[in-house]
Length: 514
Ligand code: HEM
Image (cartoon, rainbow, N blue to C red; front, top):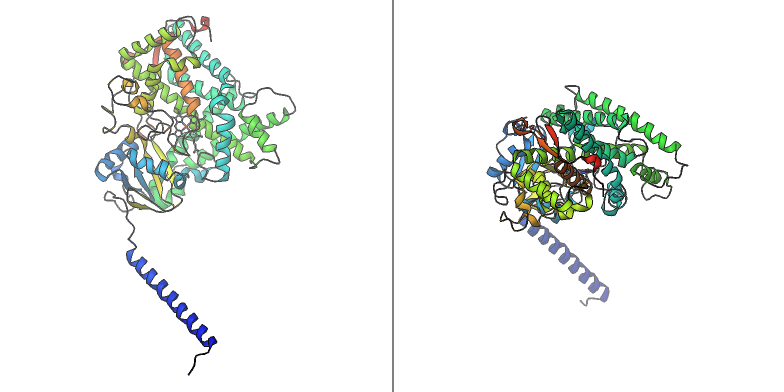
């Protein structure tokens, strides 16, 4: 029987259809037979409910470092119901912070954020998305980077001079000086004035009130982060810290709302110099702004700046001075450098810093040895592979910057204070190549990648000039009275306030400011 053309086309179609079906089936069978089971990083033996809580001390970065020596540079840790991957060496950090930066551009949050009265308004904890990108761009173009910072230089000079004058007063009266408090007042007032110069003069009660509220907020939030061990009960406010946190945040809300209203009442007044609040309120009012800011977002942004920027900078300066007091030959070397580069008729100025390599090395070594941000948080937003292990969407990551910056494979005598390691030609390794902005994954005091610190330029200018000015103008006698004990816990601050006895060398009030 002859096959007509319609039957022929039908047969051809039939053949190709089954060929396609068959090959698709084979393809999927073959692929699924090759699919490997998920590979998870190693993990220490865990207890039911507590997880690895029993293996961790209150000096968290240090105990994680000890575990990493046994379980490797990427390990799984669980605390109560929360699970984390912990990265503890430079190569693993580089994969997370550079190779897969976008996949890890969000952060996980602790139980404390549940008590935040400003819902969805955070910047530091904001997920990687339109709002965070908009604010980051604003910070880097209009607020805290490069030439933008110069317009706040008079505030920095003025506040540094106030600090030096107050020490000169202690010298004249022969009184001890609580340098910890004075340095915190310095960093708080600088940020408050940069942020809202029109309402916080730095000498009025508002800056002080803000400092107290921010301190309360940080203490409660830190206590609440330990609630992770309560597992499913972590949202229950067992010890009342959540309530205290909400009270502190309401006080902040009332204070900053009043400040915003005062700005709004003055908005008709021409102002030559814009502060951070002016710029944010302009964006808030702009109907064509790419992202419309809410009032809560503006308020929370200030809170974020103060939480992230005040104690970090002041604690680092306290550590620098403490280490110099413990190592008089380094203090002498630094003073000689300042005396020869700056002289004795004017005060160390921001523009002197490029000519003060030992001062820069002291600052870097302080940030390496006593980093105030020892654990970097990230959350994985897309499946990927790190060190040959599968990392799934939603995984919480901790990068142990403390362990990386104390790694004996990179740093000779890692627990010693040796600024020389950051000087060219001093025979202490190649630390002099390492800059502060996180390009080298062995040295991460300000983190790295998209979520790295926005305040690095401001913080380092302040540290260089304040430490330089203190060493230039005073012999700070601390001797055995200086207590170098570290507070155990997340950030490794000093256990007791740094109290010293300033003896005047150069009177700051008669020195020229360049
Ligand atoms: C010595 C002083 C400081 C140190 C050591 C420090 C360190 C850090 C570190 C380690 C991070 C996390 C980075 C990461 O996860 O990769 C961070 C984030 C941040 N820092 Fe700083 N910081 C300091 C001062 C400041 C100052 C003065 C400001 C404000 C002007 C500031 C604002 C911020 C903000 C807003 C973030 C969050 C950035 C984001 O999530 O996108 N910091 N800082």
